[in-house]
Image (cartoon, rainbow, N blue to C red):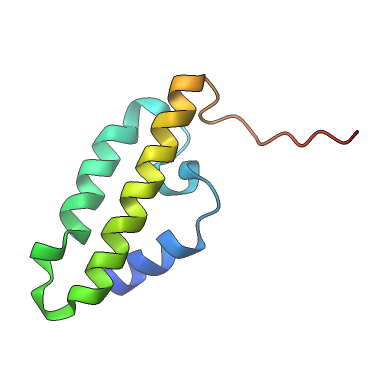
Length: 82
């Protein structure tokens, strides 16, 4: 998958599970793999897209870590109607 395709997937994701998969044990390994593929240093010819993709990846990783800490990673989103 090329940089533009990865950027598109990161932009379209609605939760970190869509980026890293359902299992929390694979989050770090998947993050490292994607970080190597989207890092701006690896794409000097398309710096703007790489910057955006890498920033989005970091945002999704932070959200995944937050959900793991809260114990809700991989659980479906629940909406309460009152």
